[in-house]
Amino acid sequence: MLHLADILLRMHMGLVPHLDFTTPLGGWGFLPMVALLDLGLSMGRAMVWSQILVALLLLPAIGWVALSRFGPALALAFGLGELALVTGLIHGETAAGVSLSMHYNRWGWAIGFLVAVLVLLPPREGETPRSARIDGVLLGLAMAALAMTKVTYCVALAVPALILLPVTGRGRVLVWGLGVSLGLLAIVAVVEGPGYWIAYVQDVLGTTGSARKYPGPAFAGVVFSPAYTGGTAAAAVAVTLLARREETRNMARGLFLFVAGFVVITWQNFGTDPYWLAFVALILAALIERGVLPGRGAAAATALVSLTLLAPVLLNLVWSPLRHATVSKEAYQPMSETRAEVADLYLLSERASEVKTERVLIDDDPEPPVTFEGRTLETCNYRGSIVRLARAEVEELAAAGFDTGVQPLVADLISSHWVLSGLTPLPGGAPWTYVGAPGIAAATHLMVRRCTVDARVQTRVLDAVEESGRSLSLVEETPLFLLYAFD
Image (cartoon, rainbow, N blue to C red):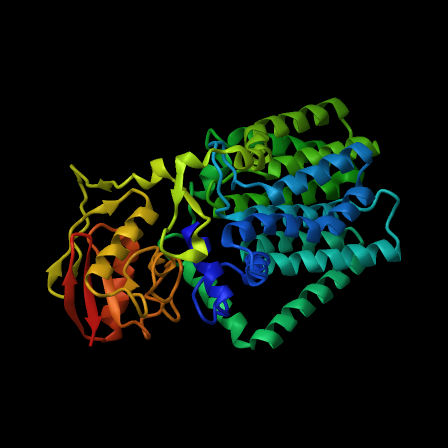
């Protein structure tokens, strides 16, 4: 949430993602919130109401896909499921909580399901020139939105779409989709300048080569670990059922390709919830409804198993808005009491009190200690509340006379101190550091934490600082950090 607040405030100030600050996330994932901020809403209200705004924006597409592909019951289930994904106030998993963190992943799943259904299921009444045009336009809008929100979704779903549409004789849909999506992305290049896409690609490629290539289990773990093997088996059964007859064989290939794409998306996202199980159940139910699926009993059982495996996550998602509306504020405290822009964002008091460090007692293969500016840095990992840590560091910076001006370059993963203080963001910096030392050219100071949130990132930033050739002098030493000035 600190990361999200950082990006929103930067964009509210008129800064452009990739051009003015480094992030692998597309700007459209934040535009609804920024638009509401620009209209005068507080940040908390802008975050919550943006979920409703996006739901309204997607409603025509959801309605078209639901009514053209499914009967009444399935259309209603699909529509409600899409709206639950868009408006949920938790990223997923099963822990009872409230957070708009990683909202763009939910939006990406909802748009991704629209793409998959448009490509995999032709209209129930048969395709006409009009329906192909509508499908193509919606497909193009959806793919452009995914490219401008989180490019992983776009790449993972573009492959099956590009393969399946020509194979199934729906080339007109593909042509419309490519025309609309490429046209929209070209407009972005005109508005932001051609350097926008170069910067976006550099940010994404930098992340893929960073210390944080994927945030959860390895790819094989997302497919075959105990938590996911049941879902993998259900998908395999579904593909097998579709492959048994000639008329559904292309459908089997398509389902396999989309599930593979969704697995890649799951692997690339924190929480790794297999939302694609709902897609498997939906496709099986739709084909049962159309009367084209052999082994109807087995298909219904597979669909039921898929939904059952995902049920805890879905229930948490559906329940989260009500939990948010009824939660007691007594258990929370303001994220910042000094920055008015984030005054209505609240942090669990229990979480705020978590100020923990971690040290290794026995290490059979220790990493060599990090040395910087002639000093051997402590081996210490911070495992508590990042907001609490940043607030304490802001207080120490203020006590040392650094309470205004540009915030320091921080040799660590997250460095949103300016969000909690009177500092200003580091030009060219990063709300979340993946690689290098973004913003070093404009930095006047460097903060080196004694206990790092991510030691790998600290090493990369310090290496980049040394490679830059800029000389440093130590100007402040506190219990939490070392502060250097760039000469």
